[in-house]
Image (cartoon, rainbow, N blue to C red; front, side):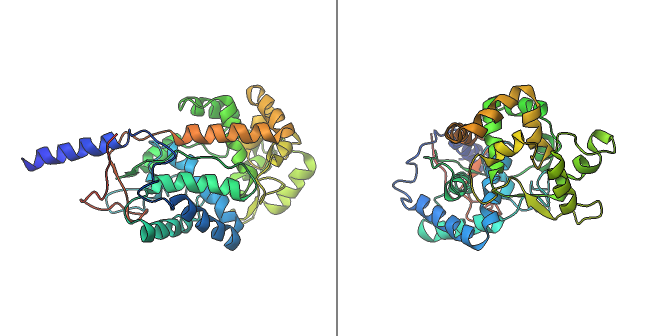
Length: 328
């Protein structure tokens, strides 16, 4: 066979693999302990640094919206590729990549070359929610890891903390995610922290007015201004809701009270289309949890149409040799 023809066949084979149907029992025979291993590492990460699991949970959103759930955001820069870690919405924001490294190392010891980094992100996000008091659910697995990343794509797609509900509705709609999905998935801000950098404009110059965002409840605004004065180190962090270590519906209660940390949070209550879901979830935690699970599963189904592999190291591709592929 001509070498070029062989490369074409291999590329076709791997591309087909990305379209394989995801299923809960994907690793049942090849790595039956996979989900136990992921949860065990996440438990240890939670004990070591509670904020880390919230950081890892957000990887699913930042990965899946940029060319599908393929772990492209985990790739480090190379001399010929600018990765997504330094994209505008990720730099100095995404953190705790070492937790994923730890999960991957544990899985490679147990089942070398079997579990993809893309699936690790999906499992770890679920575990972050479940381990902090939120719902648990069965994830669908069987993804491949991308062979490349594109910082430019991330810059074009990912929203900023300044985004309003109208922009977010349009963005999520492109991925067949509903307004309800948007509000429920925003509820992942139930745990974790945000940086002063993300709120300085709404504290001091909302929409170029030279004044704070009028939607911020006055006492909460005073608290934020004390945390983030004009001359603050903008990497200082504040809690995203009043119970930042507990996954609950407090986030929505805070929005109703005008205590949303980010503009992209608070605007969900001030915008008519999203307000009804904020009000519903603030009163009914069970409804929020149900909608969240539905949204996370739908987001996890966003698939890449690009060639892929099973990376041995989540930060770098395997090289010219593709370690593992499978057919649909």
